[in-house]
Structures are given as structure tokens and as C-alpha cells.
Amino acid sequence: MSTVSGKQPSADPITERELAERALLARRMHHSQMLRRGLIAAALVAIVVVLSLVLYPVMVHLRTSWYLNASGLIVNWSIDEENWMSGGTSSVDHSNRNWYPRPVGPYLKYLPELLHLQSLNLSECEVSEQELPAVAVLSELKELNLLRLNQFRQGGSLLGMGDGCVASLRGLSRLETLSLSGNRITDKGLAMIAQQHPALEYLEIDATDVSDAGLASIQSLRKLKSVHLGGTLVTPEGIKKLQAACPGLEIDLHVDPEVERYLLEWRKRKP
Image (cartoon, rainbow, N blue to C red):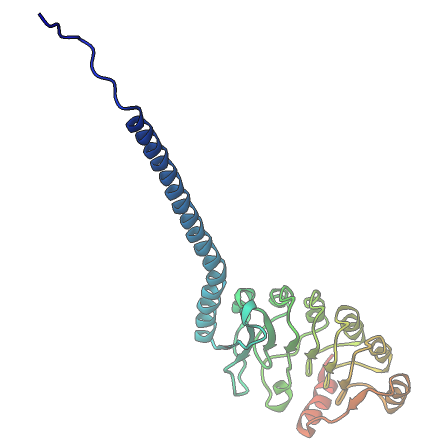
């Protein structure tokens, strides 16, 4: 009689080896796939972060530009092949084209949100010395116009600012062009200008209260190319001394005759 053994026949050792190799290959493929997915996810996150860093300032700039434009200021945004990677440069003008001063002081605090603001024109606009410190944080500013001549031309109610406006501009070390014509700038204010803005190339201080004593401050401005002194308290003797000390400096003594006439009358009336 034949007997039946309870043992199962052993698997072929070659088949077991193939299964082990296939399992190892599957694990390796899984790990490789997970690694690729991780790298793709990291790349996508990096792209989103970079786009956010780039686009957020642009979106803030566009939002602020729209708000300022609606408030009477005009924001110009310039992008070219040299500055496009940094977001371009900005300049701000105003839509006030008549003699009536427009209040812009409350909006100055939004100017730092603009991309690389380099030029600011607030001529004949209503802004006080107390509001000007908002401009002092614009470290990239190169041109600033705070001209106040319409008070003499048409009897405007906006009086010029005093030396305090100069103190409020401390920090604008890159400023190259500054116009303070028609403001009540004295020799003390001129000394502050020379100390605070060493990069100045063009300075307009016509119809101010600057005198011969203040001209010595100008000599320290090594980059200064032109200065407007019409309608000031400077005498011909003071001009001669300045020309001798700064032979290459262009000195402009022209002033609007109407401005000069009203300025003389105003000086006679002031206490």
C-alpha cells in the first residue's frame, strides 16, 4: 500500500529569487516616484513663494497708484530694460494746474508704498511742515519740488514754509534737485540743506530770505552745478564772493517781475 506524505512540495528556488528581485525593484521605483513628487512639490512651492515676493510689491504699488490718482496726485511708473528686474522707478506729480492749492498732506504717508520713488513734485500744493516727515523716508528720492510762488503771483492763501521744512527732509541723502522757491528759508535753513543733502546738483531758492551770510554753506556742496538766487536778500557783493569761491557754479538771478514786486511789498508788510 502506498502512503501519502503530508509535506508540500518546496517552491522552485529560482521563482523565489525572481519574486524578491521584483519586490526590490518595485520598492525602488516607489521611492524614486516619491522623490520626484517631492521635488516637483518643492519646486512649485518655490515658484509660488518667488512670485508672491515679486508680485506683492507690484500689487501694492498698483493699488496705491490708483488711490493717489483718485486723490489728485499723478503716479508715473517707468520700466525699461535696465530697471525691470527691480520693478522700475516711480515719479509723482499733481493734477493741480491752477493757482488754488490742493491739500495733499494726508496722502504723503502712502508714498513709501510706491516702487523706487525718485521724483516728487508738490509745487503749490497744500502741505505743512508737520506733514513733510512722511517724505523723509523716501531714501531713493532724487528730485523734490516744494515751490511756493503763487502766493506772490496771485495772492494765494498758501504761505511758504520756514526752515522747519528743511529739517523735515533729513534722510534724503541722494537728493540731486531741490526746489524751495517762495518758502521762508533763511541762512539757517540753507546751512541745513548743505549738511543734509551732499549730493545736490541743482538748488532753487529764489524768493526766499537767504542772505550773503548763508552763501558760505553752498561752497560745501561739491557736486552743485546750478543755484537760483533771484528775489533773495543776497547782494551783488555776495554773488561775487560766491563766484570766486565756486568758479564753475551757474548762478541764476532771474525772477518773475510780478513775483518780485509782490515779494517786496510782502516784506514791507511782514512784522
